[in-house]
Length: 156
Image (cartoon, rainbow, N blue to C red):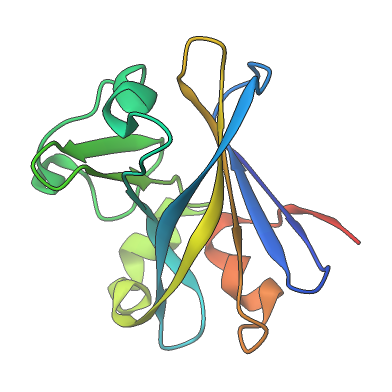
């Protein structure tokens, strides 16, 4: 289960929910999202470890692999990687239309990244990652930013 929702508050936020488990604890961490030339968010989210929790433990339930090479370019389901030396993980999110992304590989051409070093990591009672919530800069159009991941539910 991967659900993406957003708010149009100031600043706009995006929430990626990875399970239905209740959030028992929230921690602050750092996330990076890559963006293509059209302003679309691509691939998923890079998660950087934080002092407040173990990223390795938070991602363990997703059976992370060590190499991004094992991840398809147009994901159809959630895939997770984790690098223990860097204490960094990556959530490769499923695209709304993986076939469209495969047909137009230029959609995955990197342009720039956005970073939120005060993102919220929601953890379950078992300290597993339930959600990630991050801010989107005002200069990014939220509807365009989210386009490749479908029509997420938007809250105002």
